[in-house]
Image 1 (cartoon, helix red, strand yellow):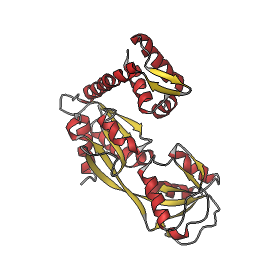
Image 2: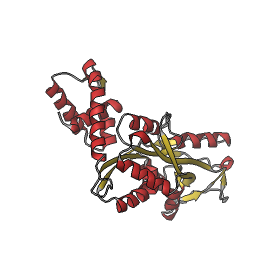
Image 3: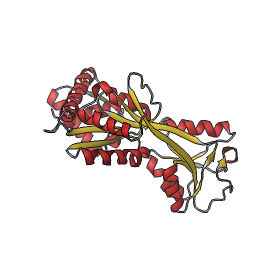
Image 4: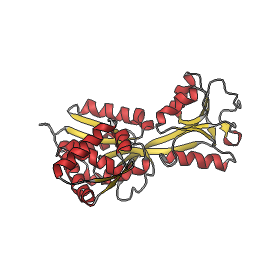
Length: 295
């Protein structure tokens, strides 16, 4: 039994199948499948029932989940607890972040952190579903999550708000859009939208509520799993979308028609963590974030 097998086993459990686990971990599906099969051979038990393309835990699989999570938590804690002779953190710090927040503030904070603590390594995981933010921390997958606030089920966890993200309307190049900027939501153009799955982001619900309150509706033309794919689809003329302000401004430079909105649609974002469980590296990262904007 090795750590990769444990990690892949839990990924299949947490994401309800090999395909989703492979997407989250950004590895090939056969890699996940072979690791799980190898773990089953070594333990001499079947961990999953294979039902079509689905994976359902057996009784032996259920029994392994708890010990497997403790193994991973212990490894991460051991790596993150290291300090050098001067007391500065080293080892590894695991963070999960929404893709929309990875460029800023995550890249900025990680850059500042690495300049001060060059011996500490950081692994950034892709938070594709914000509803999982709190459970990722509570189950030991990472120390810190960067997401929109308030996080789902954040009771018992600490929060450090970093700022507010504003959303703008982005339309395909050449679109006939009202000249008003900001654009009243009640005058939202009647155009199909490129959207992401419902529930994958707190901001999605915020946008839909604001549009509905204005008496308009979002009619999806394409639903994409990867948020970063929205802009290429818009630029290809497939439909409009709502993007974070910085991404919308970049889209305008590539020919998209962009409008800010009235009323303003925004969502707070920040760090979610368990202060009692932070490693030296994790605590240093939170302290740095507080010095750069947390109240």
